[in-house]
Length: 319
Image 1 (cartoon, rainbow, N blue to C red):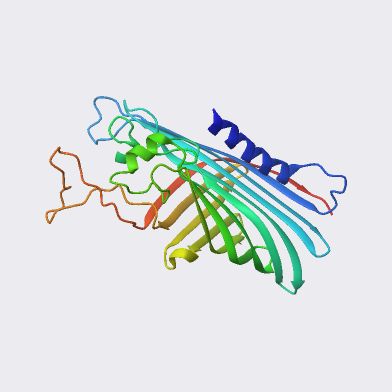
Image 2: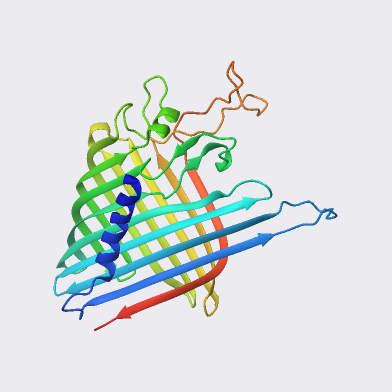
C-alpha cells in the first residue's frame, strides 16, 4: 500500500508541475500524449506453419511543459510506459515498464549557456521476473522502488536550439532504492548487495557528477526522434558509472495511427546479469542442486520494441 501511495504522489507532483493552472499562463507551453498499442495472433489446430497464439497490449503517457519568463524557465517531463504480452496458455508477462519524471529550473546566462537545478526519478510499475519474465519459472527480481533512482543535481546547461539540450552537474546526489524484502532475499547471497544497496538496508546514498543530453526533433515530416542519455558517476568509486540511452522513433501513418520503434541501452555496474553462465559447448552451467548459475557480473543490457497503434496529443500553447 505504501508503494502505491508513493507512486501516486510522485505522478501527482509531476502532473501538477506539468499542467497546473497559474494566474499568469502567458509563458506556458504544454503537451500530453496518450498512446495505446494492441496486437493479436491466432492459429487453429490445423495450421502447419507453426506459431503461438498471443495477445499484447501496451500504453504510454508522455507529458511535457515549458515555462519561460525573461531569464528564468521551468521544464517538466513525465514518461509512463506499461505493456504486457500473453502467449498461448501462459499468464501475461510484461514487455514494457517505465516511470521517468524530470523537473528542472533554468536561468539563462549568456547565449545558449545557463545554470540549472532539479531532480529526476526513475523506476517501474510492476514485478519483474527472471527466465523471460515468467513468474511460473523465474524468480521475482524487481518491482516498484526495487530498484528506484532519485537524482538531485545542479550545474550548467547548454541549449543552442529548442530541440536539444545538454546538462552537466559537477555535484549531484543520488538515492538508490531497493525497499522490497523479497527482491533483496532473491538477489542477496553471501553478503552481496541488491542493486548496489547493502544487505539489510533499503537505500544507498551517493555523491558524484551527472550528465544528461536530450534530443526531441522531427527529422522529416511526420517522423519524430527522441533520445535521452544519462550518466552518473560516484566520487567515492571513480569509474563505477551508470549509463542509460533511450531512443524512440515515432512515425505518423494516418491521423491518430503511429508506428513506434523504441530501444534502450543500459550499463549499470550495480545491476548484475541474471543470464546463465555457459560452458564451452554453449550450455548453461548448473550447481549441485541443478539450478542454473547466473553470470553475476555487470553487462550491457539492451531492449527493443516495435509497435503500431493509436496516439492522441493534447497541446496548449499560449503566447
